[in-house]
Length: 329
Ligand code: TRP
Image 1 (cartoon, protein in one colour):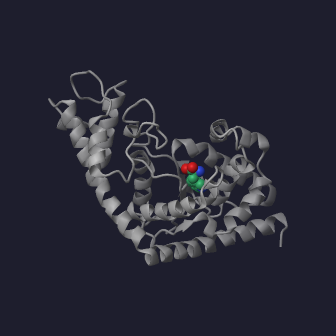
Image 2 (cartoon, protein in one colour):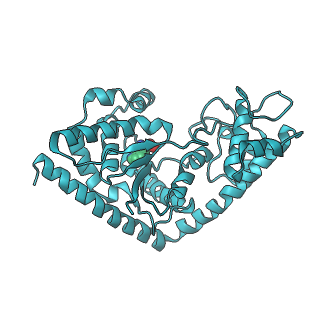
Image 3 (cartoon, protein in one colour):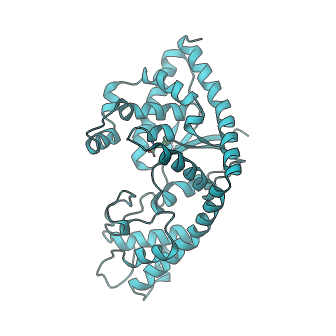
């Protein structure tokens, strides 16, 4: 059977939110099926595009890897690795830089946003971030790249770079497709349900961190913004209520119809408590696994070493081919 290849990555900056979990990490777990082969990566090189503290980066990188395993990524089945452990990423990135136009990079929404936010540090790495990401992807010849809405533009650029390279030098890279989750792609903020839940929200009550204590999760949901309508329903414009129902469905596996039925005649208090309980039931085991794995230094080291070896083998093959195609070596 020809397996479909999947690759995705996450930057080790900050603790993921419930939104990241429902929209991405949980799907990474679910994608590990017999007809697919998945590579998962912690993108530590990408974290350097903003000023960082070395010890913090080291710690956050390991912590993210432990969290991915805790979320259900099975490293025996899907290579899990740290980007900087596979040198081919930086090497292919240079070549791809030479196949990426300034105009393309200038159009990237994330670059524009970050340049505005870090006006004192608009470095070249921030600008060429997407060609490194294209290297991350193209090295593994994946058919699909699961990403959030905000990364779709980068995957499209990777496609264009692949097509451009293939046209110039012959078939070298598989042209990948971005895939976005159909359900729960946009979990909204608890305080401002018209905007996506974000870990950089200045109000910590606006988001659930994957490592929030159960009591904190309960407290945050109890404070969640809803509306004044008397009946709980999923309806146009009812952002807060819709969001709570969506989270409820995501964590219980129920359909929206079943969810609405569960709250017939109930008030918001009951809804909020039930949602919090469902979230706690889903992520408390993840938190316990995370602590266990992070404490097991030998295990985590060996997972990351194996992951880098397996990923490195595939990556090196693609890199060798690309080098040969352009006339290096
Ligand atoms: N840029 C992605 C993000 O910020 C992380 C990432 C790096 C990535 N390399 C990747 C995602 C390759 C998918 C594929 O979320």
